[in-house]
Amino acid sequence: MTLLIIIIVLALIFDYINGFHDAANAIATVVATKVLTPFQAVLWAAFFNFLAYWVFGFGVADTVAKTAHTMEINLVVILAGVIAAICWNLLTWWLGIPSSSSHTLIGGFAGAAVAHAIAVHGFSGYAGEDGTIHYWYEIVSWYKAGKDGGMPSGVLIIIAFIVLAPLLGALASYLISIWLLNASRKIIGPKIFTVALMIATVWVVSNLMVPYADIEKPRFESHFWSVAFDPHNIKWCLVGFIILTVSAFCLIFSSLNLHQADAALKKMQLLSSAAFSLGHGGNDSQKVMGIIAAAVAVYINTNPGVHMASWLDVVLPNDDLGIKGVMPGWIPLACYSAIAAGTLSGGWKIVKTMGSKITKVTSFEGVAAETAGALTLYFTEHLKIPVSTTHTITGSIIGVGLTKRVSAVRWGVTVSLIWAWILTIPISALLAGLVYFVLSVFIS
Image 1 (cartoon, rainbow, N blue to C red):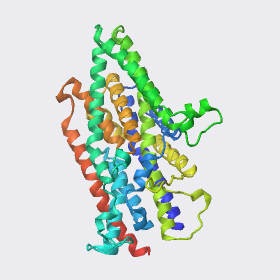
Image 2: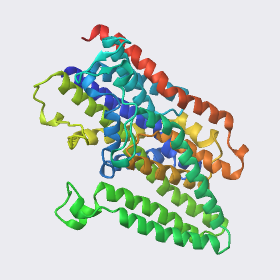
Image 3: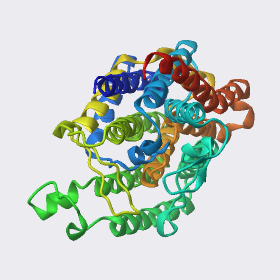
């Protein structure tokens, strides 16, 4: 039990580090454009990091918890993964490199699990409980097909989104920028497009809302408030609100002078940065929830018959067996509090990289980049894919830079960031493997 408590404490410390490491993702553009002072910006971002507790479910947490097969690992594996993730995060923060805390955690967990499989079974095959032959690399859940044609999961999908998340962010921010640029012109075409988009948004969001009869655990006795505050419904209402707000601005953009437009864009940056901070809190806090849930599941597996206290009554969901997941309320509350506290600590070296070194960011680019980043995070969270908020917002900033000209993006800095992204998972995995072998000498 002592080892389990240590893992939970270290996981929350990692969540805190994640907050100040990734604070730049949400506040870099509002600081660069002087919409808020650095102190105001971190307060703003931290508040919405914590507010995400009431908005998002636990889909990403489930994906992270199942990175490795919990029936075949022990607590030393998870401890090694968390320690490796903390070390890599602190190193990249010190160097001012906006690497992915998400991929650091995934890489560390997977690397320690592979090291454990090699230490226990070697490189040859071994017979599993079902009698079939297994190999050391199968301890990691590399790929699992989606149920009923849904989105597949596994480490390979997470690796694929190292490329796809920034590309989605870049494409979304590029399209939003083009939309805004055309809306600033005194022509009828962009306005017709904007009205059509508003109608389509209302229709799509209304169809995605979950009715009261389909809500498993209503939060209130009132049908209205239960529907209004259901996490799924809140998330899609936020998506609709973001799109409708930008659309409303586009309808009046051409009638504003330069000063009025800049003032309006700076106010909209408060909305876009808040939306992105919500996505950051919801996406990244869930990864730590998943690690804590996996640790509890492993403890139960390695101590059969143990009676768990109610505050540690965690059950991982299993769609194949129809088992619903159980997560005590203190775990998400602690994770969201830790990431919010970390964000309050700031991360000024990375703010400088994100806010000025990639491309010069104005209020116009800030709105486009943060809006695109937020929508990308909401979309991937809906698919239960743990993506990097760092990669997403960096891709979004690149996308707005491309609307000016290709040379507006400082590709030397960008290439260095991409190398950091590519190396994060393998380096974290190797580091976690080494930490596992060292810990195994002292912890039986």
